[in-house]
Image 1: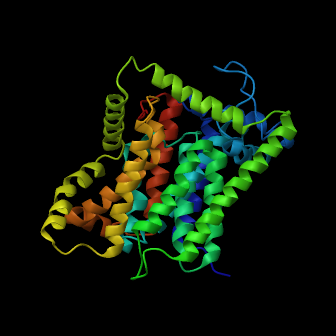
Image 2: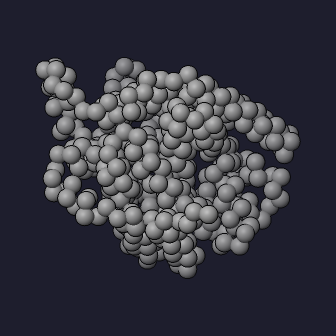
Image 3: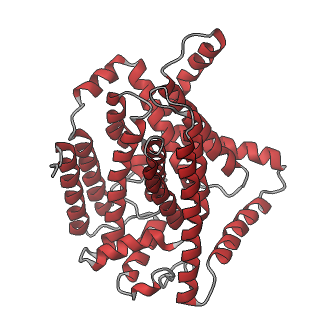
Length: 401
């Protein structure tokens, strides 16, 4: 049996310390959504498991009755953790910490398909220094789980190019995305398709039939999961889920558009695009600026036919650019704005910008080389997580979103 390496042991120790700290300080987030979701998961842990598919709003919140804002996939792991004995009020925050750790692990592994080993490994600690990382350090809402599911799906998609059974990992990521974020899961297959179209590895063709077939099978799995969720929901409540959920989501978006004050749709779309673009610049700072500064050089290379970087790096850059346009373009169509809607874009832009900075700034590269130790990302996560937990419990200022 293969023994865990020092990096894995460091992550396990850091996560264990984080979980102990959350329980010890009786942590409560200031973010209202996080408090709501943590409360729902805690209440679910004491309810019969047959009803977990259809949780209710807790008393005293802005709504009452069935919770249909999203599917209940986010709450089930936290409720299970509480059932196993972890403090119920902190279970959702503890699971979010696990999602953070796994996100950093998969971010490094996905990046390794497109950039050098040092650059990919460095992202595991550089990504933790983004403003969005400080904002979401301890939360209980969907965004961290959403990014993890996307990265899992991308990892499975890439590996399926050579081993078709890895498409099962793609399916797991996409189904998880559906159960956590509902309608927003549509971005998952789109990003996997963009990955196959833009990237290649070791001179392989840009697309392989097995990988595309695996993606198609994963989409079918999403449909099957949606049908099963509907069946379980109807069995638990006697009511449909997806029709009511979609009518609410689309209705809120329509209401936001109607409240636009008569601004022409085209102008409103441009304004929304600029609003989201500014958020990407800030929440992926400072690496977003490094990426922006490198754009003219890339354009000059293309115009002057200067030799391009390796195909994997060029494909990774194209993937990030198209994914960013997909997110900003899609959410700019509605006046229903929220910074969290484009959360994955902050991670993608921050990661790509960090790679650019590593290549352009020798001092940063030397620092990354000096910190290229398997335990460093876990140490950075542990220190920042513990400081945030203590600061939040004492009411000290933290980065907000």
